[in-house]
Amino acid sequence: MASDAPVTEREVELAEVLIGQLAGVDITDLHDEYGAALEQVVTAKLEGRGWAEPPEPQPAVDLMQALEDSIRQARRGEQ
Image (cartoon, rainbow, N blue to C red; front, side):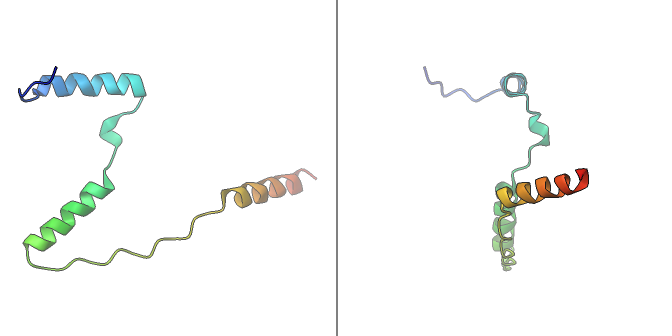
């Protein structure tokens, strides 16, 4: 049943406690990079200035290769 009543602070607090206990995640440690970046863009636009281009993305690390290299190094250390 949907309600048009606004969510109270107490309901938000209870939801945060429930989420924290069920998920084991402290939501105060979470950071929304997309939201922060969007806020910067909106602020820059409102102030009539441009914004910096995002940096080029770094190439992804080949995790399998890194694991194989790590195992190879560990084996060399054992011999």
